[in-house]
Image 1: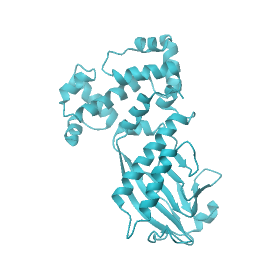
Image 2 (image 1 turned 90 degrees about the vertical axis):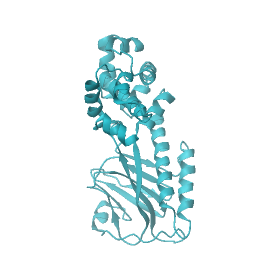
Image 3 (image 1 turned 60 degrees about the vertical axis):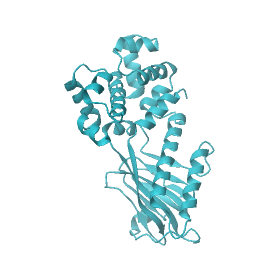
Image 4 (image 1 turned 180 degrees about the vertical axis):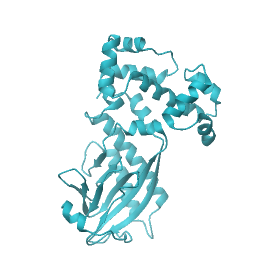
Length: 301
């Protein structure tokens, strides 16, 4: 695709993401597991054996084998189970996890955790991603991700027990590699990635990322793409699912977040991202992130 490295880096950097583990172990016999109803994104790495992913409304279950991973970016109704059919999985009970034993010949070994996207800006980006992403062990386009998965597998074999802190960080990095590949290769991805696949719009995004505080109008944004004002607005909105003004707002608030991490004041940041009024900036920042700028600045400090 034509997405520039600037756009990919902006997307990855804008995800204020934390990762936490909740299960490292194995299931044997008849079992099912799910995080549905917790209103959180989750991930499941298969480090031993195989299982099936059953997602409500999907007619075909997804087989997951050793070395595969699934990232669930919505609070989906789903079940992981050793049973291949949805009906069979529904009959299986929830069971406590056994300690991970990578030398065992039976059962399914899992590393499971949650993703927490910390701001409204992150949520706006995640909303453009697929509801779930499956990483396959043999995917040749994800060499770096595969190398990370191998580190996870090696850590799982550590005795007497793997390091939870290290597994969290490795899983976090694994997701970022998978996400980058989605932005680069998934031609059905909407949002900013869809704009990035069009050279003229990719050029505009690079300018917005580099100079978010400029006095951007619909006319000069359209001029960057060589389209008329009306054609630009129509095509931009069709591709992205958001208006040019909404995207500019995202760019400015992300830049504001970065400046707060450099300990700039609210007044300084307001001017630096193109606002003449602290009150107007405060309203815009809260609208995008769900936080007051002063509180956000304090948390970064």
